[in-house]
Image 1 (cartoon, rainbow, N blue to C red):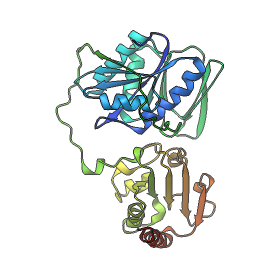
Image 2 (image 1 turned 60 degrees about the horizontal axis):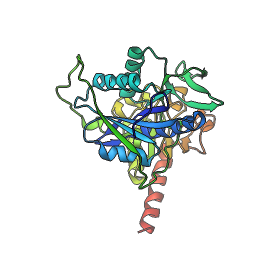
Image 3 (image 1 turned 90 degrees about the vertical axis):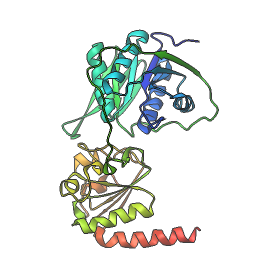
Length: 329
């Protein structure tokens, strides 16, 4: 069985260490909803080598079929060329990508080469009667704009948290098709990849995030945020002012100019709730906010709000969580 032309919705699956990343699996789930409305198949597209395990995972997480493009080069340009090949050969109605740094570059490149419209940082997708309405943030997230798509194809770069990934269906099987990609004249070449320890934090994949803002008062006080994250088994996040003060590396920054996250639990400590930060966390399942200003905007999106000085409250929370964990042993 081979993948049909003009009968599918494709999703580029970005991988790290051979495994699909969360936002790509979320895009796969969203593609499934659109495909159901249009009567199309969902095809996951992998680019690289040795991705058999990732292909099997894509099937388990909702793909009807998987297209593996065997490409040794890892440059964004090489991946973009591979997806241009996919568009030319299969003419999908939609090409979904996750809104990562690479995803945005790749989507824009494919749109340029294939002369297709590209919607970036999409935060909402609604399809009815063959028409799809996409919601996009504008002006640093201060307003939301709706764009109705009547004549596909179109490239959609989906923000993390827009659609929860499907539950894995263990043992599910589907068609996995492999192709080789023509090695065109790629102008860029990766000579070496250097990953600093400070850049190893993976906020996008975290299930628990404890984030601190300027309300923590000082770099010394910010250590409480790190301690709470540790006892919760979570990852440390921060607002832009905190990273600018060098309390923590910029790789921990969350918001419009940082990373977009969608954890199961988000604890905001001393964060006022500026639009630029809130736009990066609204996809969280459960938000706990701690701020001494009872009128702080962060409380507008919080499921639980604690009015008080985070510097005084966090030590109490840390000790209580430690007691609970100790009693469970």
